[in-house]
Length: 102
Image 1 (cartoon, rainbow, N blue to C red):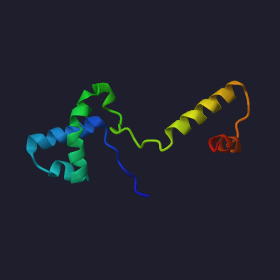
Image 2 (tube, helix red, strand yellow):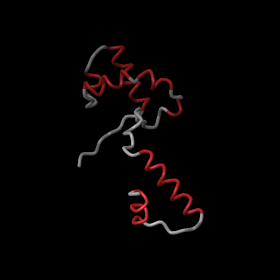
Image 3 (spheres, rainbow, N blue to C red):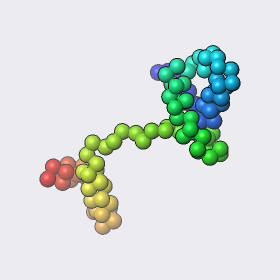
């Protein structure tokens, strides 16, 4: 398995700034960043700049992620499990399957 390196927001912004100053694609090609990936960073540069400076050192993913397919079912099951655990009742996966199929 290939170990992937994830750039922090601060590093991404520095690479973008370096490219804007030099206009030389070698600034991101030497760091093994694809052209497509670099253009995605450029599109999101405004969003990255809005994040406070102290939080820019951690790695962020600037997309919300996949949407749940059955969001209402998930919410219902989550609330049911929460109520049952509050009543100290056992929750089994068979029970969850049973109530989700109704």
